[in-house]
Amino acid sequence: MNQLPRTGLTQPGILTLSVKDKAALSAAYMPFVKNGGLFVSTTKEYRLGDEVFMLLTLMEDPERIPIAGKVVWVTPRGAQNKRPQGIGVQFSGSDNGATQRKVEGLLAGALGHDRPSHSL
Image (cartoon, rainbow, N blue to C red):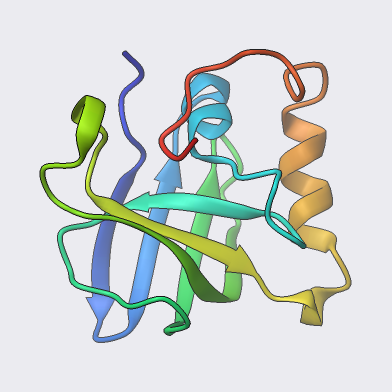
């Protein structure tokens, strides 16, 4: 199984997510969410609709991408099929799709294929 992207809290309400490889990004990406989204493994409790702010690092890129988002998916602890606990964060449309395009560009050729996923 793919290693989950590392996440942590740098301040209350701010998540950090570091995705090290394409397989982990593919498993975390939620293409079925409007504007795209990412699954973030976390033990912190969130509710649907919670606003979150995330600093995202993608693979070898040293840039940390600031993402405002909303919780649209919650996988509770002890979920079926040993799915990891965490949340799905929908990207805000305020960046005009830049984050979604960046993620999908990195996943070129991998979207639409049967792939392991942390959500569906």
